[in-house]
Structures are given as C-alpha cells and as structure tokens.
Image 1 (cartoon, rainbow, N blue to C red):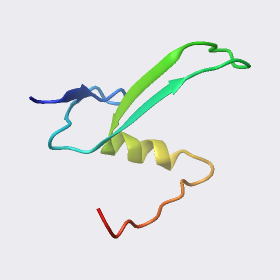
Image 2: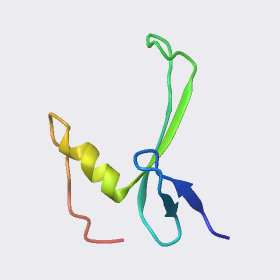
Image 3: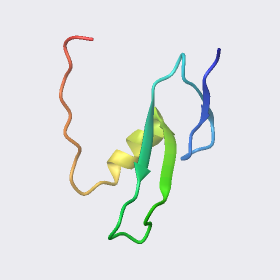
Image 4: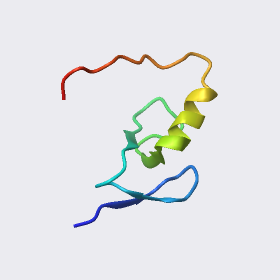
Length: 67
C-alpha cells in the first residue's frame, strides 16, 4: 500500500515508499503556551534543506556507515 504524505513546507506529495522525508511529532507539555497539544508535520528533503539554511546553529551531522 502506498504511503503518501503532504509536505507542510511546499505542499507537494511525498511518496513514502520512494522518497525520504522528515516527520516531526511533538506533544507539548506544561510550561509552554501549547500545553497538551500534539503537533505533527512532514517536510520533503528540499524543504528540510531550506529549514537548515536558516538555523543560527547548524545541526549535528554524522556519517552512518552501516544500515
């Protein structure tokens, strides 16, 4: 069965069987303005790269040699 997601950044369809993507799911707890909310979004690789380009501190990237 096809797994189709929609990129929250650009709106294009992501075929989860043929494309890699970022999936974020965050359940907010106390001491935030989003108490008890569950946020979820998807980003295609292109939109993920755009997100990384605006971060003040770069993400930590390590090479994985075994899958």
